[in-house]
Length: 61
Image (cartoon, rainbow, N blue to C red; front, top):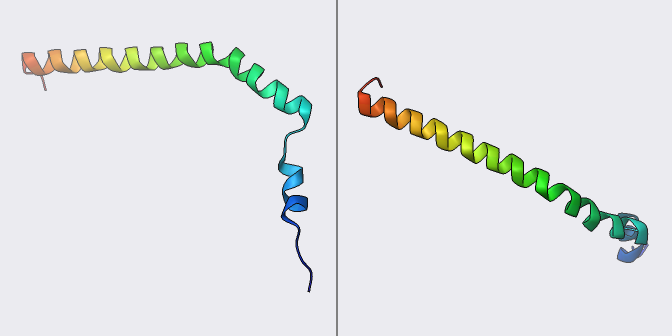
């Protein structure tokens, strides 16, 4: 019966030194883009909500 070493199985999933350094830098470069995109989506949803409310007030819906 073989005993499976969990450390040996998990090792390929571990990040190397270079990758672990690059990940936070990549996130630091991408978060403004994500924030702008989220702002655009929320603004669009807000505008659609206002338009729907205005149409509901007029009685078109």
